[in-house]
Length: 169
Image 1 (cartoon, rainbow, N blue to C red):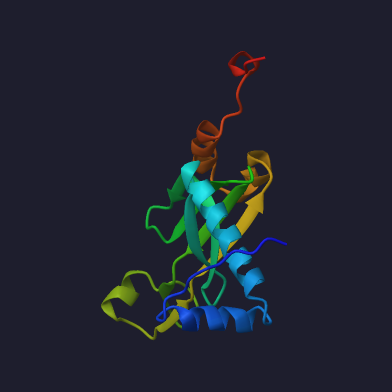
Image 2: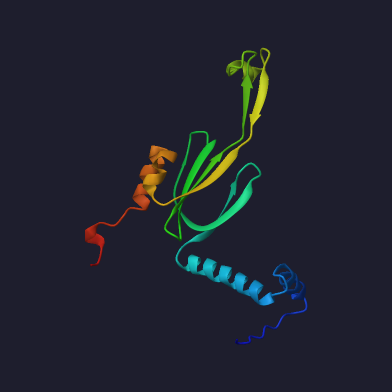
């Protein structure tokens, strides 16, 4: 097995020691895992992909992947936003965000409308927490029913399949 010598500055030594602890005493496996990740990210960048970080779920847990934004759509109030990314593996990732909303209701549970805005009547105020999801699809067709038609058209134009005439056969 080949030997490689790595010189580590005194200031970086605690990082190497912690990595060795986390890797169960095998510093070589920790370094190899880090280098694999580094090579993957840099290769992706050279291919035009960016590292995308999105928040998902109730706690806003971060998810990372390499992708290119191919389409975005939001409703008029931007309270619901859809983003579609093309990934390095050729799949499509759909990130959907729903913003938190305040709503005022009257004593019957109906939207309070203008009365809520001026403070008339016996009103209840509710808060709905936002939510976000990340789904991965093999094809645009699989995603079709999960996105607004306007976004489908945008993405279809971005990830168009080449025709036979475009192929160099």
